[in-house]
Length: 301
Image (cartoon, rainbow, N blue to C red; front, side, top):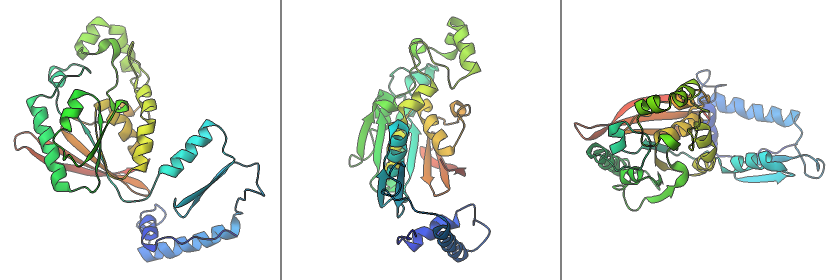
């Protein structure tokens, strides 16, 4: 019979009171007792896998909520990626902060892409962002930043003791031949490209550039690392952050390119066992203060 390994009662309680099976239906203590009885029933009904008796089967045992793993006969790319994912997720309390760079000169002109520096308003946001994290006092915060000038300038005022890394994978979607153009320019010069993009924004690939589908592909290692890390601030770009938010918000691929993430706003994600809490902050340019906008609870990834 399988043996129930010791696990923190406090952690177990926090997990179960938020479960859809129990939330709003019974007290925390009742949920815990019911869950323990459920495990006992599982132990009576299910047969544990054994590497000798089930030598030909592929499986992974996750023991005591990820304290240890047993991997057996894993074959092929897909199975390897599943193992990698399971070995990197954790249940520790943490927060993931996502922000676009401050307003750039190209933003002010309505132009796509490029590598222009921040405007005066963009610099104000960079300073306000640093003040926010000075007050927030996030323990062990790591900063992941795109390699574009506007993103690096947005992170420049953050405390030097934050560990900062610059990821090429966090660079904005490459607009190819449309880099530096406005949407009006694209409509006039490349009307067919504009129509194709409007018809299927997720799969549309700019000539000599990228699609949202391409960005999702290059962000896989970033998302894996986000699952593995503790507190992280990501300073990136609209398309990239839409892809990351779609993962945590559990949005469909057609919805992904339309997720709203305006300039000078900060998203705080707090993954839970069965959902992801999302808190949105924004900079008031007149007062120079980063203020709370709203909170929402999203289905987990």
